[in-house]
Amino acid sequence: MTDPGEGDPEAKFHEVVGLLEDWSPDPEDRGVEVSRGLRRMLDARLNAEESSRWDRDIVERQRGTLAADVTINGEIAVAVLGSARTAAVSSIRSRLSLLGGRYNYLVVYWRDAVDDDGDARRLIERRTTARSIGVEGIVFVGEEVPGDADPSDGPFSLPGLTTGAVAVGAAVGFGLFLSADGVVRGLDAIGGFPPLARAFVLGSGLLFCSVLGLALLLTR
Image 1 (cartoon, rainbow, N blue to C red):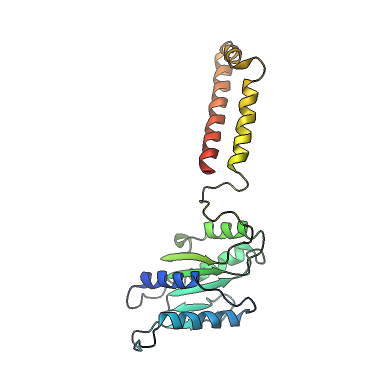
Image 2: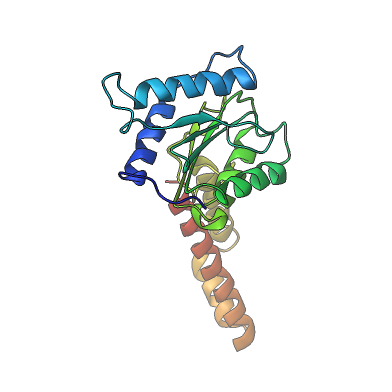
C-alpha cells in the first residue's frame, strides 16, 4: 500500500469521484484512447493553470492488463470497466482486489453498458467493498444500464418482486383463508386439533404473515 501524500487524500478522492460522475468518454474510444482521454481530463480539472509545480496533483496513465487506467498522486486509482457480462465476475473482482493491494482509494468507472448488465454489476459491487479489498474507499460510477431497475432501489430490494406482485399474493392467500367454511369455523376446527397439530398450524400462519410483512417492507 502506498504512503498517503500531502494534503487530504480522502477529500481528493471525493473530488475525483465527482469529476468522473460528470465524465463521459467518446463512445468510439477504446483501450489506450480511453485512458489517455481520462488522464487529460483529470489533469486539466485537478490542476489549475496558475498552480505551482509543488501544488499540482500527479496524474499518470498506467500500463498493463491488470493495472489501473489512471492514478492520482500514487494513491488513488481509477479503473475503467466495460460491460459486466463480457468478462467473468471473478476476473473483474480479482483485478479490483489486486488494485486494492496497491492503492489507498479506488474509483471504478463502468462503460459500454448493455441490457442485462445490472445483475452482474450489482453482484460485483456488493462483494467488492473497501474492507474486502483493503482500501480506504471505493466508489462505482459510470453509465447506467439500459432498462435497469430504478437506481433508487435500496440494497434490500428483491429482484423481480414488486408491490403489486406481493399484493396479489396476499389477496390470494387471504382469499384461500376466508374460503370454505369461513374464518370462525376454521378457528373452531383448529381448536379441535391435538396440541402439537394446533401449534403447527398457528405457527405456519404466523410465519406466513411475517414473510408477507417483510416482503411488503422491502418493496416500499
